[in-house]
Length: 177
Image (tube, rainbow, N blue to C red; front, side, top):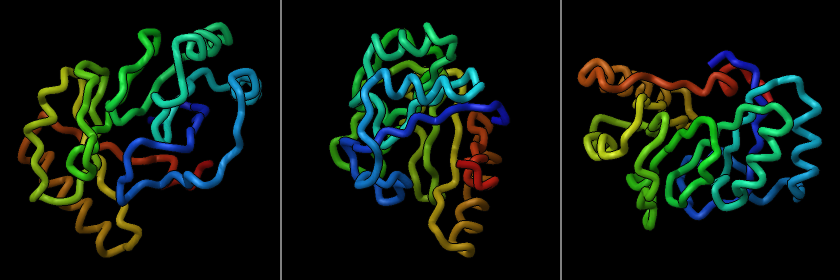
C-alpha cells in the first residue's frame, strides 16, 4: 500500500463474482509488446497484473519481458489456474464462497486476500493455502449504509482472529486511476 504501481487490468474471467469491479465488455486488445510499451511509459517499478483473471492471459515469457524492463511483477489472481513460476509476488483472492467451479489450485502464495461480507462467512478453509499474510477486504456493496456494516463486520472478524489483517482498496478510496 502506498507504493506507486502500474495496474495491468485484464478483461475476462472464468468466474462471475457478484461484486466484480471489472468492466469485462470494455477494454482494448493489446499484444505483449503493446502492453510492455504502455507499462514502460510510467516510472513506477511495481506492475500489478489483475483482472478479471490475469492467469488466463499471461505466461512465463510475458513476465520475463516485464522483468527485462526492470519491473517487479505482482499478480492478483483468483487462484483457479496455475501461475508462471517467475512472478515476484502472488496474491490469491479465492472466490469459492461466491462462485461455482472456483476451486483454488494455487496452494502457496505471498498473501491471501478474501473479499469479506459478514460474520456468516466461513473463514477457516482459507488457512489451507500456505502464505505469509491473510487479509480480509471489505466487500464494496455500492451503498453507504451497507458498506459501513461490512466494514464493521470486517473489523470484528479481525479482532476475533488476529491471523487476519484488513486490506483496503486504497486506489478506490483515493479515486486514483
